[in-house]
Length: 106
Image (cartoon, rainbow, N blue to C red):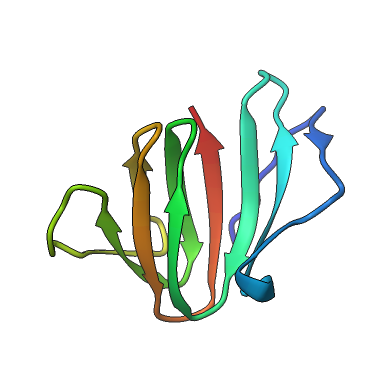
């Protein structure tokens, strides 16, 4: 099992809860001032909007993603994969199995 080791982080205790609890995360700020979020998505289909650009790392699980402006080109991501979403955009995600993720706001 891979461990994320970051010292001197500022953890926001309150969880972010989306889609009736099917997606949850907790935000923290690392020691360099970068805001990140660790979360879990249960199987289902979701649409997310972005304010800041985001880099998503799939820690475990499998998803398919459709980026805004792309008609029908779903891309598959699984454990160890990353993808980026531009600021002020959106993406649809199909979660095939319980998925852990790390989101870095850029």
